[in-house]
Length: 295
Image (cartoon, rainbow, N blue to C red; front, top):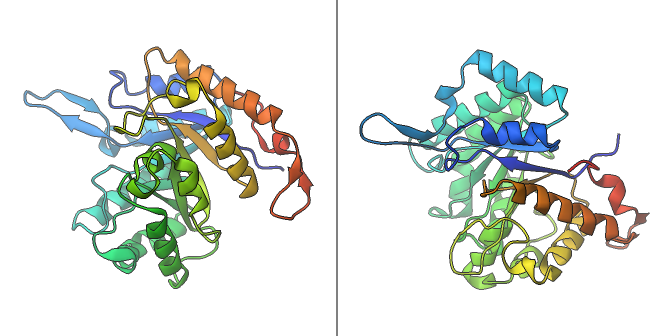
């Protein structure tokens, strides 16, 4: 079976109903969906968002069964507090792995933190890598606005020295909006991609836009690409070169949500217009064969 590039969306703390983004994905035939455990509690007992404690086994089973019935690939975004360098970080990540396993997800995503350098981060993450691998799951490490291509090159060089990391166990989540904000590649996310070593495996994508001023998570084609989509075209070409077959998550809940449909439709159009060609000296491939034909 030929793997597909799947487009999907994500849960959002800004959405009053925690299941609404998922129901939207099901209703509109998205091929991927990401569960972001992001919850904020307020004085008086009210709360926004959700975390794993809100999802009992019955609900987890329903999510898994619904995903299977609609051929939706799930991923899980660990809480932003889940930093393995912190004492409570590893337990939070283990909790995300358990949730991902229960709903039949493909991977768990977390942010790279370079406070103790690449070797320190990798050492702290090792028990989570082992636990995830034992659960049949992968980990993706996401770039933040503060982490550079060099940071990822160093991190994956350290990971290659770790016995716990088998082929395909850990990869990178490339976040386009964060790459655009990174100081060395400011307003040039394509340069960010080009400075990643070929040995850094990109296995997951977060796609959103900004104007280089803030992490505004603008829906694709509503920011700079609204007037000029050359950057998006160059991004898709880089994916082709790397033979990317994972999910592409539109990481926002816009108003109106219809903007997600419009972004996915425009991505499909650009991919269908992409002509076949040679990839890194390899054989000719037809890019559209790898794309999920649904929105």
